[in-house]
Image (cartoon, rainbow over all chains, first blue to last red; front, side, top):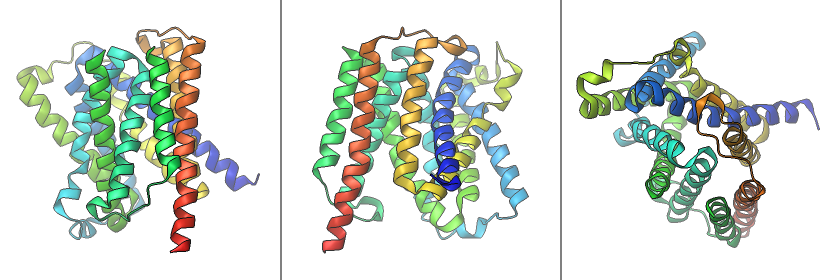
Length: 146
Length: 155
């Protein structure tokens, strides 16, 4: 394994760790100050940090946003409901079951969008591994819940 | 129980939609302009929802801790790591590793009950459930990808 692969694996590993940490931190903060408060606060600090990186990198490209369909510019707004749902679920059913269920819905809908070519994405062929994979994931959640 | 599952499904579906929309923005504007826009939109939407559902109470932060101010940085960590991972390994491998690590940390977190969350005791049933979810995710990511590449080569 080369240095490139090792670095890539570490980055991907920490991306996953941060994803879980993000959900858990939101749940923790929501206990103390409320869910909408937590969502507003974390999105604001994230926004400020990202803006800082963007300005420091001098790669800001606001003009390019005009070429994007207006609907797609609002994708970020879903975060409000995503954070609320995630926090509520973690508090009700725990982190493992929440993330497993969330991933099934996420991969399942992405798969549906890909197979139908919705939103102008490149259409992909439905194959058995897709169906078997989702089936196994659901079986896993059933085991977790049992 | 049921409400928790339903909201997890709603959240997951919206993550999927958001990824599609964000990648459309990303094609034109690059990853940091996109991340900034996405978090800015998330802030505005959360603020509007908060004012709608909580009104004045949105500004009452009863048990605020200093580190809560910095928790938004975790999102920046996610984007940085994921973008670098995908650049070095390609999307399928990077996302497979990230999701495996995400699920493993979830199990670890439940078992240890860190940060004052309700502890979900570790059992072999929990571990086998997570392993089946991970295997399913890997079959989905790798089996599906291989076949569709062969298919696109053949056509």
